[in-house]
Image (cartoon, rainbow, N blue to C red):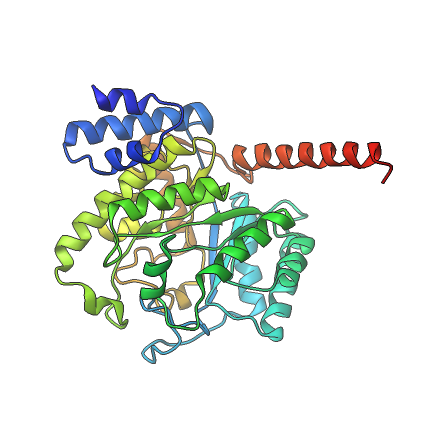
Amino acid sequence: MRLEQVLNKNNLNRDDLIYLMGLKDEDKLEKLYNRAYEIKSETVGQKVYFRGLIEFSNRCIKNCNYCGIRHDNNKVNRYTMNEEEILESANWVYENNYGSIVLQSGERNDEEYIEFVNKLVKKIKELSNGELGITLSLGEQTKETYQKWFDLGAHRYLLRIETSNEELYKSIHPNDHDFQSRKECIAELREIGYQVGTGVMIGLPGQTREDLVDDILFFKDESIDMIGMGPYVIHEDTPLVQEVTDQAELRTRNFTWSLKMVAILRLAMPDINIAATTALQALNPIGRELALQAGANILMPIVTHPNYREDYQLYENKPCIDEKPSDCKDCLANRVKNVGDEIIYGAWGDSPHYFKRIKGRESDLGSQIDIDNAAGK
């Protein structure tokens, strides 16, 4: 009886979220996933939007303990696609009517890199006549850099927090990382006007179900517009793998937790965009379909040039690294069809939550202008 009551509540509290994260019975889990899909259908529709993902460089100044392209991993073949290769991939996305593109790389903040991204954003807008939506996933930058990229035409930014538990955050990063700096970047992106995306890794060593519930509450508190989260998947060339005692058990648990998180997040934040991440497919051949059925509505097919895909592995057993962009397109089209959703081509697919947030911000600004006018300012 309690499950039905919780599934039909408009505002879930922390106890409700903890209860849902603790579900184990398959029948109850099925009810959770079905309810999440119903809410998805009512709020963002039975629609899926593609974001063509270009992983244009694996060079990184960071040394995150979980990441396969961390700076100190000398087993990685480092690369940066040149401008011509990136624009060729972007043009493929445009010609295949995906509607949106994601530029992702290892983290850098030197002037040469920033100027390189400046040119990319500007030229992608030009080659697509302003029609391609541009999401950036390029790590922590200064507010001035974020503003420049926004002014040039980028309108979404994905900056994953990885965990909202500050102590856990410290345990998976070296000392040159700062949790509060990460949060401040998210606030700056929101102030500039980006559609703000973040996300977490699910099933980190030492992470609890309560931590994950608090992640959802963090997303709500920060009024996030889009979420890209997925299971923690090991990489043998990282320090964090040493804390994993049973890899098979980890894979099973993390996949289940990830589907729960997608569904519960859809219940908690009905009008946001939620990605069915590639990492899910690394743990289950139909992981992305199951995520769509649990409430996700975004797919990010890889359009990185095949010559570089094998060298951009943040985790092991990454799927699709041996496929061409056209292979990914056909494969994902079939996966979406099997779920019963519809791919919406040629659209940015912005989240309704973003427009509500912006409208609320404009109302607040309008109210402040009225107050200022009344005060003679």
